[in-house]
Image (tube, rainbow, N blue to C red):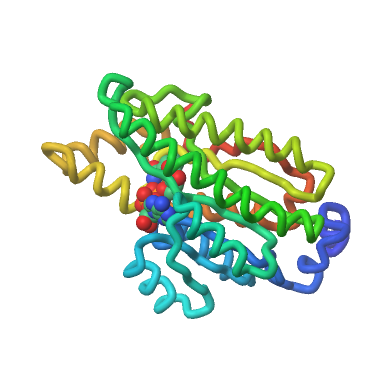
Length: 266
Ligand SMILES: NC(=O)c1ccc[n+]([C@@H]2O[C@H](COP(=O)([O-])OP(=O)(O)OC[C@H]3O[C@@H](n4cnc5c(N)ncnc54)[C@H](O)[C@@H]3O)[C@@H](O)[C@H]2O)c1
């Protein structure tokens, strides 16, 4: 098969493949938790594929670093758990194609280590933020009869019971249900919703969990030794899955829970 007929076969309506266009040209994307880790890497990958990216976070300093390094990425300070802030932010946007929601917090411990405040705090950061962002952006997507929501969940959820991740796994399992429910409700309205379920990714928050151990160097070695592939994921590896889910290549994909865990759940 000649190169062009391969493209015709797999991507009959994908003009950008034929015209050498970038994969996310003309797409307006809001990224939450965009200042570091998976959110930052994904904001950069989206921008590199031609998207119009607005990266949000509560960490203003890191957001400023991002925009200094990548001046084509717009930034905004946004606490995704704050109803008033999210409403104001979303109503200021005239158009939106994609929400990439990466806000999340890892509580360490069993059910007995998790008091009521910690329980509600994790629900607030991990689940309520996804509700607030989606609840305020879906009306705009409905107006356009087109939209795409990508939620960063985790393999530690209903997929795998991970030790000392009681409330974290509970909230991520809730997000997996959240994604299925939104996908089902809006499948006829042109809105897709999918989740990414990473294993362990080398991000600043992972690094700080390692630093909290009595012997951080040993903790790092032990952690890596436990990985099926003998290494952690890099944020940009999660970002490449996000680019696929954000692009028109995945037009027929909705309600899916996409594991990217280096074989952790095999
Ligand atoms: N790192 C991993 O191993 C791993 C594995 C599976 C899933 N995840 C998920 O990926 C997502 C990103 O994790 P990470 O490790 O890349 O990031 P991280 O923990 O290194 O950074 C999180 C970012 O979220 C921001 N943030 C926190 N609360 C916020 C709020 N209320 N509003 C807006 N921003 C807020 C922080 O300022 C920070 O920039 C999370 O949902 C996490 O649960 C991470």
